[in-house]
Amino acid sequence: MIYRNADIENYPFPFPRDQYRYSTNLEPTGRRNASAAGGWGDRRVDIDRRYRSELDERARILAADPSRSQCLPHMVPACWDAMLTLMRELAADYPATMRLDRISPDDNTFRWRNDLLGIDDTFTFGDPATLPTAPLDYICGQIQEDVVLLDQRAGQLWGDAGVVTFAANWSFGFDIGMSFLQIHGPVPRVHSEKVITRAHEFLMRLEPGQSFRRTNWSLTVDGKLDTATETYREWGRDRRTLAEGPLDEVGDRLFLRTEVQHLIRLPHSGAVMFLIRTYLLPFAAIATVDAWADRLYRVLEDLPHDMTEYKGLERTRGPALRWLATFGGVTP
Image (cartoon, rainbow, N blue to C red; front, side, top):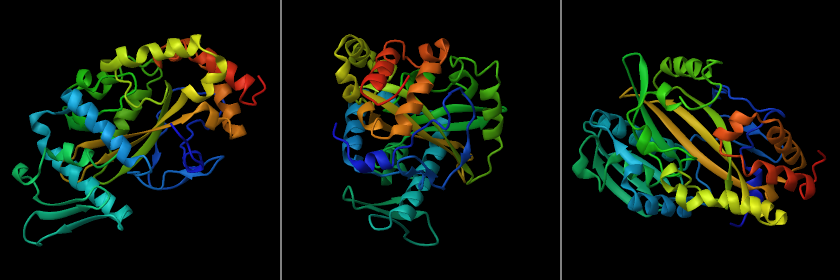
């Protein structure tokens, strides 16, 4: 995987301090966050130079495993709501290549154009016969974000629909239909510290159109986007080969994986749309920014055992620290 300066300049480096612990870390969307290399976060839906390659990878994964896209029957209206919301977002942020027009003010027929993919379709909102595929599949074939739709009922949020092809060590197929609190059940420390409970209560109070974002992170070997539990046989051994391989190869093989997660209350269905955009940057690129290399080292060095285990870093943390100290310019 070849990296350019723009990948570094726009990378959402996730660590504001030398110690990482789970927190709600929610902030309003739509404003740019400065970083040591540039900045990120201007848009809720981000298109970059990997647009086509990541969409091709999504299509490949869905063809191999259709369970990555699921919608419980009561969530069909939310899927339409999500599709139209994302189209409006894309048309507003990328007017040179994306356009959404309402054919007539008296009906729900729209024309959608995506010049990047050569798409020019007319559809009637709510009528599946007017789209080539289900609405959430249709729009997820045109964005790089994974999407989970959370239904709010009985005083809880439930993950009842979504298209997730780039999961990091979890399974959308397993989590579909589970509550927000159940989904986060395995995360260490968050229950005793009530982090997830506070986040859940906050999200339940979101008003239509309101949105917030947060970051999450992990490490990935060889730049793989799909590290879902379903494909563990394909990527699990990479951690071992990295740990047992030459140290000088770690800088190119080990990636910091940052997820920028947006939470948006949809205007018509009331569902909460959870967007997950994954960014990967190899340690060799991280090390070109002295402040990032040093902070990444401090965070990894300090990370408690239970969090290391949950994030699947038992094999990779040691090589990561040794590479940063040997080749990354970091003084332990």
